[in-house]
Image 1 (spheres, rainbow, N blue to C red):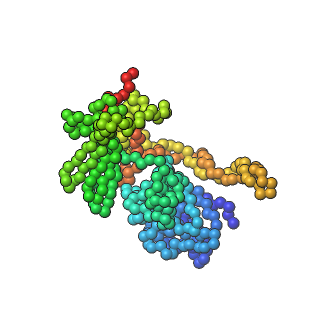
Image 2: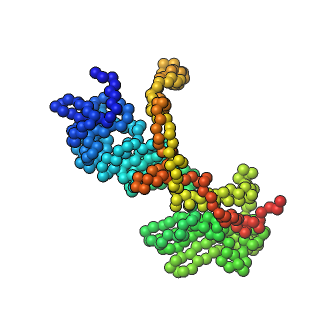
Image 3: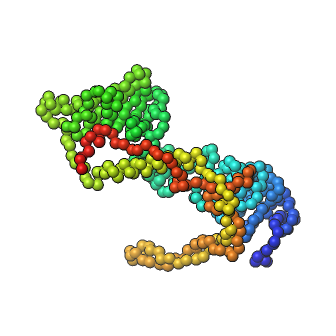
Length: 411
């Protein structure tokens, strides 16, 4: 038995008369080799004929054999019972064997329009079209939880128990859309929309009646000559109710703070209780305006980045000569604490675990740098841009509503 087999050329593994054979320049299309146990290959390997559509691989699990016999002529994939770990970065295409390796990550499908791609350096996974999962999905424990048994979704909440959608904390609306959704008697909506540059929250029923939930619509934005509580400095925080109906073609703003003020004057009673916020709840105007300016600039940069996520670069910028790294498994000892069933005490013990580290081989190769892509159709190199490198022109300065500005304490 050989402990290691070294060959300077490509090798083909095939079965002849029940014997596992190794050759350096032979391809037997359709023949298969089945390996039970561990198979370690330091380099590139093809099981099957890389020149045809018979590239197949069968991985045998611990108790049940799975083979590639049921795979069609144009099927590509890895069949395994249990888990599959991909340490190298192989690539195949739907039209045939593409050959070679990716510097980072995994790509499945046509390289120009991959079905699934993952950039190892980025930690991203891209799925084209639909992703179908038969079962529940958990992303980062409680960031997103999809319960397929009870048909519930939790955001920042694992195991949602009561409603189809459960959200822990807040829902933020990006108020940059085209406005209200169309009326539909079978639907009601809640959305965010800009009004005077400030994000507001609205709801709409199935008959087209739209109501603003954020209750500070200044009637002066509709008619600047109207008498309103928003212009009355004696009213600490004015508020209103706004709604409109698309069928009637009418909208209305009710100045509720004025209604309360008139009622208080008529009855002599007070219906308004004004209180002070805690210091940590208050906002500093200068700090808020500065943070909003940065946020506006970042949103403008993100729009540019979404439109042009890559930039063409020269080979000198995109190619590096770097050492080849390979994973090495080593054993480490750590202290583990447990509850003793005999003594009822928390005790410590030493456990040995295997860790995988990348170790230099002393060999060097040319490869693409992180975030760099080679366009195989044009031969050009492209690098993924970052938000920090994008420059934007002037963006509108953030502004507070006039009724707030009028009531700010003087310094």
